[in-house]
Structure formats: structure tokens, C-alpha cells
Length: 141
Image 1 (tube, helix red, strand yellow):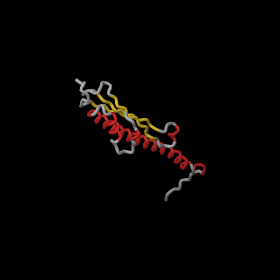
Image 2 (cartoon, helix red, strand yellow):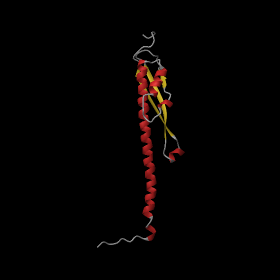
Image 3 (tube, one colour):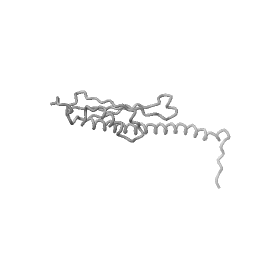
Image 4 (tube, helix red, strand yellow):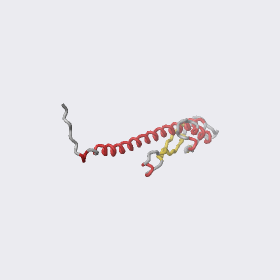
């Protein structure tokens, strides 16, 4: 026959309290992991959008409005790219062989309840550089 284990009355609820406290900690860790997963997904989406803009800019380096439109229409992800205004820079001019860089800044919202005390968004920055392939002006060598 099985022996019955005697638990003192003052320890009967101890396991339940320990479970409750540890579950709160584990749920916050899980929510944080989910938030960082969403932020990583958003980062991949804006990186792809920056690469699309840089690719378009390598053919049309002086068409800044076209580059911005290409970036904003490049993804159907949950990231609302129409609210992002990319920065296009050509520090060495728009001649073939020179670099063109498209930079995006996006704030990924944080949905974790307690994290709102510290921050309500994670700042993500993505940039892509492409070499200009086509000369828009006649002044290029």
C-alpha cells in the first residue's frame, strides 16, 4: 500500500503562491520575446524597403520622389511604409560608379504592458547603398 504524505497546514498554499509568482515572471519574459520578434520582423521589412529604394535609385539617381514612392510601395507587410520618409543621399554626386544610400527610420510599437513605462516604441534604422549605374546628366565623365 501507498503511504500518505502529511503536509503541514502552513505549507499547503505555498506551491500555489510560488507558481503564481513564477508565472508572472515567465509571462513577462514571453511577452518581451514576442515584442522583440515583432521588432525584428519590422526591421527586415524596412531593410527590404531600403534595398528596393537603393535599387531604383541606381537607375534613376536624381528622381528622389520616385525613390521615395518605390520605398513606400515595396512591401505589403504590417509595417505602414507610407508613413516613413526615406533619406536619399548621394554625397559624391550622381555620376555612374558613385554610391547612393537610402536610409529609413521606423519606430516599432511596444505592446508589452509594463514596458510602456520605459518606452512605447523601439527605434529601428535601416540603410542600403547601391552604386549608380546610369548617368542622369551629361556632365559626368
